[in-house]
Amino acid sequence: MTAYPLRALLAISCGLLLAACGADEAAAPSTPALSVSVDEPAMQSLPRRIAASGSIAAWEEVVLGVELTGQRVASVEVEVGDVVEKGQPLLKLDTRTLAMELRQAEANLQVASANARRGERLRREQLVAASEAEQLIAGEITARAQAENARLRMEFATLRAPHDGVISARSVQPGQVVTAGAELLRLIRDQRLEWRAEVPEAALVQIGNGMPVRLQAPDGQPVEGTVRTISPGLDSRSRTGTVYADLPDPGGLRAGMYAPGEILLAEREVRTVPAAAIVERDGYRYLFVLGEGNVVAQRRVELGARSGNVVEIREGLDGDERVVVEGAGFLADGDLVRVVAASEG
Image (cartoon, rainbow, N blue to C red):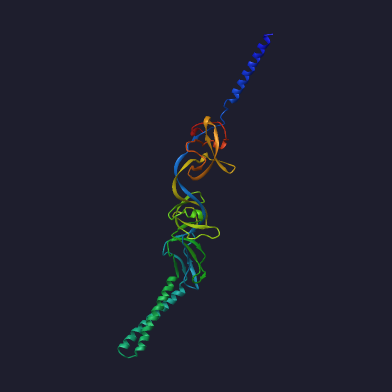
């Protein structure tokens, strides 16, 4: 009778021991999901940025034409894209008619000058009335003015560059009969381009003359510039104002292009992490923070300015936390990881 309870107690004891072992195995840590590298947030000075887009335009584009009507174009000395210097001939008109007019005006001046000298002599000798002598003298003045006008028309037959610059448009061909004031060429003065960015009113009040801007050319190269001036008024419908920025070296940018860019405001101290640590999911940005036992926690964050390979964290991160950099994109909240050096990740 006493042996049976003893065997029962042994069986219960073995069962409890096996259950305890099973519980220990269930509580044991799982295998790390991934090897990752981690980094600590850093405080850095980054410029505040205002993103904007706008057109590239000539700072001053000069419309060029001639001051004569009815003259035929003899030659066009430039093509679109040519860099020219002030005073350089750009276009020449046929001067045969103008040369004939000048020779006739000079001949008339010689006759008028001779008549004026004769009139002065006759007046001194009182051989003619004073009014007749004055008429002869006045004839020389008129002839001189006509000769000067003929010389000026000859000068107008050559269109010269009023400034240094680059030819941006041409709408004239040799043999064409031109009229005064008609557009024949366009010149971008001093080859100077500017960026005209449309900026919302809330951001416009933060911008001042002299602030740096940075654009991106079509070939991917950055282009630096400086805010020259800001429009004094806003568009009543879009509530935006125009920022004009000089581009001393426009690189691959050309007038008429549309370019994205940013205006750099004053620098400030911000908390940053490597840009590679940011994970985008479902329209939000996250970091994976390393916790106790190398278990990571997914943390939603708000980003700020970017500079190179770092990004500002405005909200969602404390200063003493370590974040996953390499391997962050493959993690889920609560994963166990193995931390390795960045060169091994």
